[in-house]
Length: 113
Length: 118
Image 1 (tube, rainbow over the protein chains, first blue to last red):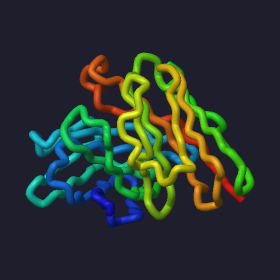
Image 2 (tube, chains in turn blue, brown):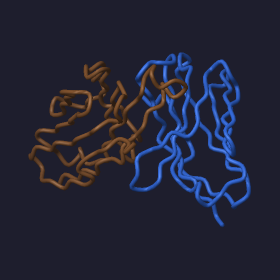
Image 3 (spheres, rainbow over the protein chains, first blue to last red):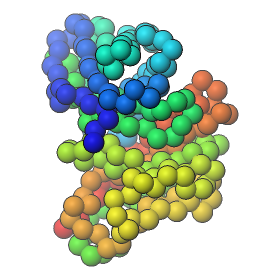
């Protein structure tokens, strides 16, 4: 049973525009969420995270929004750059400090120059 | 820092053979994780260790899979006997824990081992 879902397997965006990647989860106990970026032939790298006590976290061009009532989070990249082309994984876990991360299946972002 | 190191990067073997994947976590990190990535199921957590002790192996698919962490700087994931459906990319990740400050919960991934079982 997939507790974290990324329903869009792929997304294409023009350079300079906004990229919005979506993630839904089913476990209402999740309270810490992370986004990872993965280039081909490399391991995933941590991008940004958010705790359930916040509804927004921003780091440079990357912003994560959390809507707890809808069990939905999104990653916004603005402006999008060709180097952002990668697979993005959403992950969630139950209470900060717990070890078990649940991952979505990923969304492949392609930023078109 | 060299990051999480995994070996081999690629492994091709025949069904029935034993496969051993290796991982060296980032020095000072106290948690280590083994994941498997497939197209159908994405990233799945197989097992994780805290301070070299296995905490949760509920993600290990079958008894053919086993993992060990004999010390803080080394872990292995073994598949015996291997089957074609084990073909996937296997990732190891480590986490600093409380000593990592704001990044205490962040997992740092290795480059992965691509396993192909013929």
